[in-house]
Length: 98
Image 1: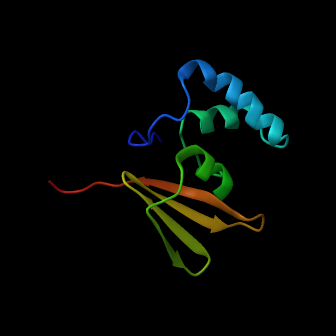
Image 2 (image 1 turned 45 degrees about the vertical axis):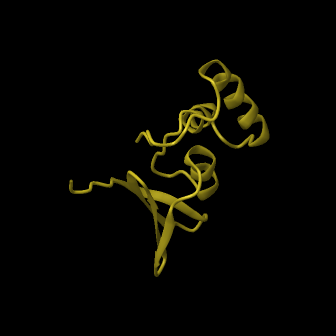
């Protein structure tokens, strides 16, 4: 899922280098995940920390029991605690009427 409204944080040429640096800081993360973060994308099973590094803080967070729904300008992210901390379990585009 692309978050096209998020401003680019790093020039394209720096992304690969930044991804490797990010993975050096988080040795338990696979390099493909670090590339996804550098591209400001989100995928299922990302942690809260990984999502914040990728697309920043949500506009707001709705909590319902064991679930959290993070609201961004163009998407909703659904987090569920799966026994290893909260992870993204679903993504949904946010559509609005015009």
